[in-house]
Image 1 (cartoon, rainbow, N blue to C red):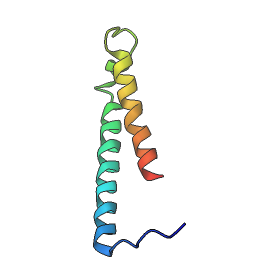
Image 2 (tube, rainbow, N blue to C red):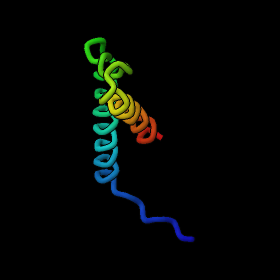
Image 3 (cartoon, helix red, strand yellow):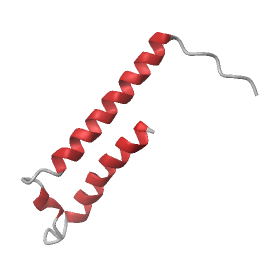
Image 4 (cartoon, rainbow, N blue to C red):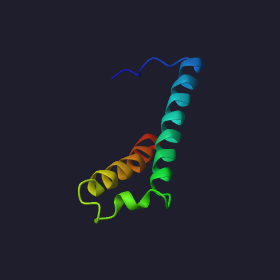
Length: 69
């Protein structure tokens, strides 16, 4: 196997910036979903929507972990 061609510094920095922006956006969405004014959306009493909001909120933190790794 041959080593992949090295990336230019500018291209590497561009990719790092895109990754950081995506991480920050997902973390912000996760934190907003955990605020007290939105926690009512994730309570089982809200039958039609509670599971959706739990999954969405969990996906935001999952994406942060996956993108960081």
